Amino acid sequence: MDMQDSRGVQLPRRRFVQGLALGGVAAGLGLWRGSALAQAGVQRSELRGNHFELEIAELPVNFTGHRRVATAVNGQLPAPLLRWRQGETVTIRVRNRLAVTSAIHWHGIVLPADMDGVPGLSFGGIPPGGEYVYRFTVNQSGTYWYHSHAGFQEQTGLYGPIVIEPRDGERHAVQRDYTILLSDWTDTGPETIYANLRRQSGYYNHGKPTVGDFLHDVGRNGMSQALAQRQMWNRMRMDPTDLADVSAATYTYLLNGQTPAGNWTGLFDAGDKVRLRFINGASMTFFDVRIPGLKMTVVAADGQAIEPVSVDEFRIGNGETYDVIVEPAADRAWTIFAQSMDRSGFARATLAPRDGMTAAVPPLDPRPLLSMADMMGAMNNGDMGHGMSHDMTGMTMDMPGMPPMSMAQESHAPALKTGPEVDMRVATPRSNLNDPGVGLRDSGRRVLTYADLHAVDTPISPRVDREITLRLTGNMERYRWSFDGTLASEAGPLRLRYGEQVRIVLVNDTMMAHPIHLHGMWSELESPEGEFQARKHTVVVQPAQRVSFRVSADAQGRWAFHCHLLFHMAGMFREVVVA
Image 1 (cartoon, helix red, strand yellow):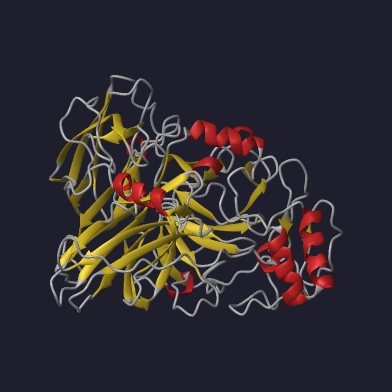
Image 2 (cartoon, rainbow, N blue to C red):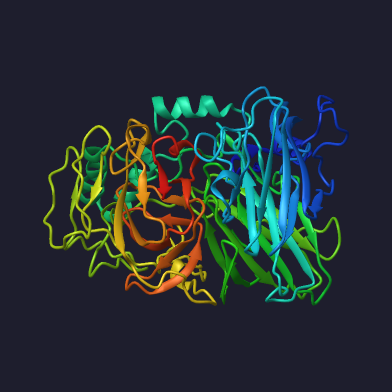
């Protein structure tokens, strides 16, 4: 009998059982000069106070039955939870025991530029054998995280959670409080993965349409329509299954450093309110999170309080955080289920009143397909809606090998020509925020969208002095990513005047969702009508979508602005200079 393994791959029963034995263990091999390493059931350390000592070094691990070496902090993967208090000044001494330069970036924390931790911008990095002392005052509260901004160290394990306790106490009282850090582990070196993607962008896409899929389409839609759709995708040299660059064929998805078989467990007593602080620390994976049978009340996004909203599911992009409160009243276990956006695998954990209890793990949802709307944007009146009509009236696009369609609507931003750096452009991007995204539309579940995010306080940017539009561009066949068709290495910095209020408009000309992260300053997400939604540090822009946010340029210095998909960052990156 075949069974689904920890990555959602069908395996013979013998291999599945083997996975259960090995999958929950991240065991040390005696190379770390400290003592205990990350093992199943080992309590993660939590560091509190104003002064912290962190040490970056290699850590032997075994997540899959194969011994590998991770990059870790204080011998842990994930790194220790850091608990700070709003209003206090923290000092963090970081020692680098690696043979290469390292660095730690405090994701989402508003701080002085020289404390931001980006080598080449805010400082020179921490050399091998060296140390760096970060010191800054914490002026915010909520859920955040930290990770390396040097090379591909984030992919090899250098990330950890941060919880900042509010000066005036938590807005929502709970009896239990857990951080849930999602990530993706690979036994393959990240340099090898990147090289494979550069050679063949679909290298890890094992879900491409098959002959069987074609025959299914013929049975459902008829031969002529099935052929027309297949020919259209072929002409565009694109793939409707191109949802994630790297899949569970290579990744093992972790939750708090545990594989699905390891099954991290959070305990509760009957009647408890439980706060779950979700952090997506993955390098390349979007997750769709739900707890089957249990409503989640979302109370914070990217560390900032929002008006509570009750949902069944939410999508979390790389770098984002969401706080949810659940009330598991019954004397039973509940599965926390986080499936990858491409449905190739999942991370999993359990909420239970007692250790050892488990709940059913749901099957992966069917693998979704990108639609024409994901490629073309606005369908009717700028909003493609949840119904996903395939009426193409009013759409436009420009792609190599395909003649342009009629243009009934002009974009707010000038369109770029296609070429070596840009293989697709969207002339009529949609601007709706009420779309949960591909794979979540019409699921029958109540899914969080950006339209649901409403901050509990007022925006900090009352006016707009200037508007800047950037297009998120790329050439999938060449695996090259960029802003405005220009690689980071060939672009000058984006310059903001100190004190000015800027609206930044992002138009996604690609078929992939991009989590765009601005360092050092808040991104105040706007509705399509320009109304304030919520304050974020990472804004996901869906395919063929236009999203805008305001920025108060109140932090002098050199800052990073980039896609948080690790292998996109080399090209889709800008230095932002505030002076």
